[in-house]
Image 1 (tube, one colour):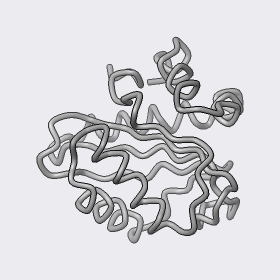
Image 2: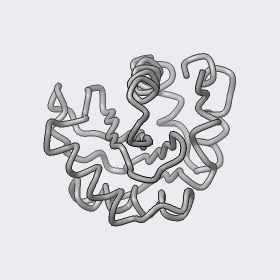
Image 3: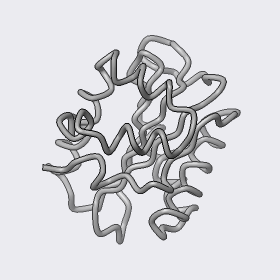
Amino acid sequence: MVHFNDIVAPDALATGLTINGKKQLFQKVATLAADAYGLDAEMVADALFDRERLGSTGFGGGVAIPHAKIPGLARMCALVVLLDPAMPFDAVDDAPVDIVFALLSPVDSGAEHLKTLARVSRYLRDDNNVARLRGAHSAEALFALLASGGARDAA
C-alpha cells in the first residue's frame, strides 16, 4: 500500500501561491516536479494540461487532483500546492480551488494509479483533513501533516 510519505517529497510542496489560471498552475507544479523528482518540467506541464482538457480534475470543496502518466517515470510521485487566493478551476461544484494535490504516475501503472488516486480522493473528502491542510502555512508544516499517521491511514 502506498503511503503519502512514500510519494510526496518535502520539496514537492508549496504554500501561499498566487496563480492566474491552470496553465500557470501546471507550470508551477511541473517546476516543483523537476526540482523534487528530476522530471522534465515541460513534459509534466503538458501531460497535466492534456489530462485536464479531458475534463476538470477539480472535484469540489476547493480541491483539485490533477494527474497524469509520465513516460520514463519509475514510481508514483505527488506534489501539493496551496493557493492564496483560491482560483477558478471549473470544479464540479463551481467552487474555486485552493488545494491542489497533483499525482504523477508511470505510464504502465494502471491499477496502482487508480488505487492511489482513490486514496488521495478519500483523504481529501474528509473535511478535517482539508481543514488541516488549509491551516498549513509552510511547506514544512504541509509535509509534516502528509507524513503523519492520518495521512498514512488514508493512503
